[in-house]
Length: 157
Image 1: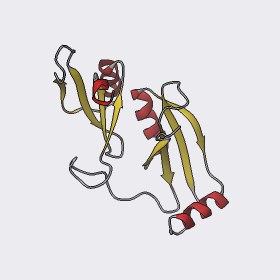
Image 2: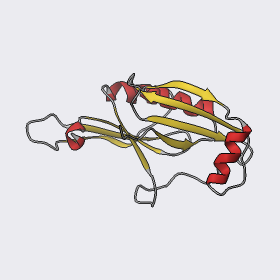
Image 3: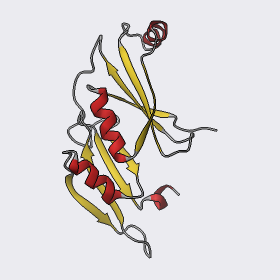
Image 4: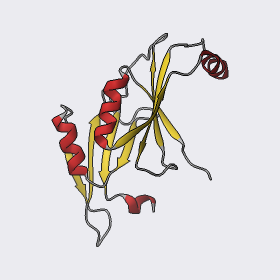
């Protein structure tokens, strides 16, 4: 089987980021601090100086073990720096789009936790004879664009 196993997001506060993604529906499946040997081998692979103090967490959306996970990493020896793209037309990964069954519930939970949508909840009629798709975007605690969608399955199906 070929698939995307996980997508890495570097974070500045692990607990805050886990809480955000749990509001969308992700479940924490593993949280750990890799040992120094693994960190040194990884640093060599990327031709970087070792960053020995790291906490990682894997979160999965849904119960299927084959689902794509989020790999959240909080670097401490050499903390994550910079900022997420300010606009969606920047080079590199700029947006994480998550399909959910209950977009209204997700929007309500995020709003209650203090996360405001970017712009409006957009309704798009993309396919004749089908209900409109729903798209709403937020920024996670570190500024990453997170788009919550419903009804876009025909786009990839």
